[in-house]
Image 1 (cartoon, one colour):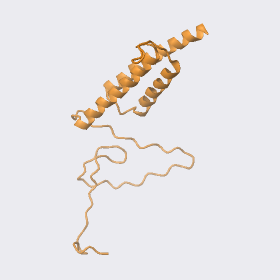
Image 2 (cartoon, one colour; image 1 turned 60 degrees about the horizontal axis):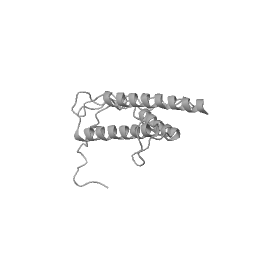
Image 3 (cartoon, helix red, strand yellow; image 1 turned 90 degrees about the vertical axis):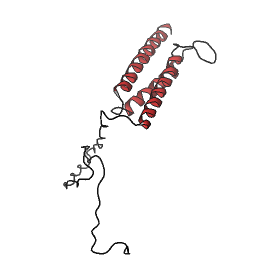
Image 4 (cartoon, helix red, strand yellow; image 1 turned 135 degrees about the horizontal axis):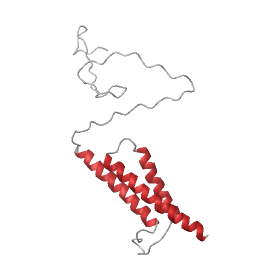
Length: 154
């Protein structure tokens, strides 16, 4: 199957336009890729390291999409933290207007926030990381306090 648009003598040029090398280093897309020997395979039974994700370029203005995602992320975290606070009796239930304590519900929401923190590690801004850290610290401290009170009264 030959393409009539290309003659046999015409050279086909492929340009790698990826912004990062396989090891995460910034590269210039229009420059030819360095020919490197393939990485040696890991011995059997040895864990294979996950590829390192390149850090976002700092100082570059965030795109509109990144700004929207940051706002949604902050709202998600605050929504979960508010739910946990309601389960810890910090704020009244919006439906019953009563302050209720549900330690198991609080534990589940705190665990969700903790999982979110772990899975987003290395991908958050300083502000987002500090928000997660402070909310989780406060919620865990309140949870332990209420759990200790519940254990003393039992």
